[in-house]
Amino acid sequence: MKGLMMKYLMINCREATMLMAKKEERQVSFFDKMKLSLHISLCSLCKRFEKQTLKIAKESRQVQADEKMSVYGKEKIERIIDDFSS
Amino acid sequence: MMDKQVIKANPGQWLKLYGDMLYQYALPRVNNTLIAEDLVQETFLSALKGLEGYKGQSSEKNWIFSILKNKIIDHYRKKASGPAITTMPDLQLAAEDWFNDEGRWAGDKAPRDWHEAENPAERKEIQKIINWCKDHLKTVQQHVFILKYMEDLGADEICKVLNISSSNYWVLIHRARLQMRDCVEKYWLKT
Image (cartoon, chains in turn purple, blue):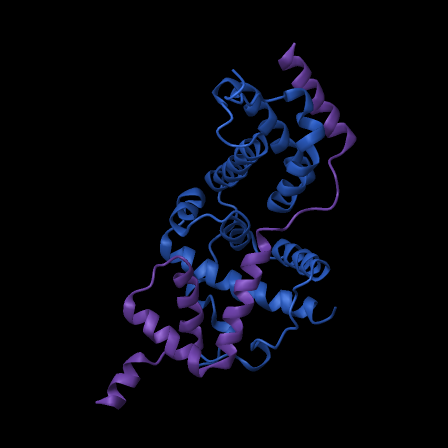
């Protein structure tokens, strides 16, 4: 019985990484969540994957360019604002 | 008389205050300097037109940024409604190269240990790497990644914007995540 249960709950790394994406959207069922936690507790690679993708998600929101807008672009916008305000 | 603070928008100062800030936000999200400039321009134009509707309910800066964010989403919506950019990748084979036949990590694709990026300089560095890697994702995957992780939209909304089915979405995001992590690792471990 226990063996059968385990067999049902076991997923592979491909499925686990897919479930992580779904978990992020809260689109996983209760059983899928259990399967994922079980897998992560047993698989250090997937655990690492989860941590690293969370880091990427966190930093992605902060991505900004260093370079500034071109002078030409700024002049164009300045004209538009002036035209509009006058 | 003074208890109610009236927040007035000040268009004369906008370019100086927000011009570069908006541009620096838009550029990595559309990957093109001219498009980024256009979006900033359209943002200011919409803000000018909507000036009467702005009553200081959010800060001027947040209000203008929310307009830009809508412009970015519109940009992708237009792109998706145009002629098909690419054929959809072979979705059945989507994640095959990453895993072996049993669905375990394929040897050279397995995640390696990273040193943490915690201080501001390291975080800036990893953000640069993320931006570079994002530029090297394939078209639809890239759009999905930008809308999900740089613009923080939900899956359902992304499907609508990009006009893709939810099963396509999951495959695309799964693959984008695998690819991004792999690419970031390569460059991050080099630093």
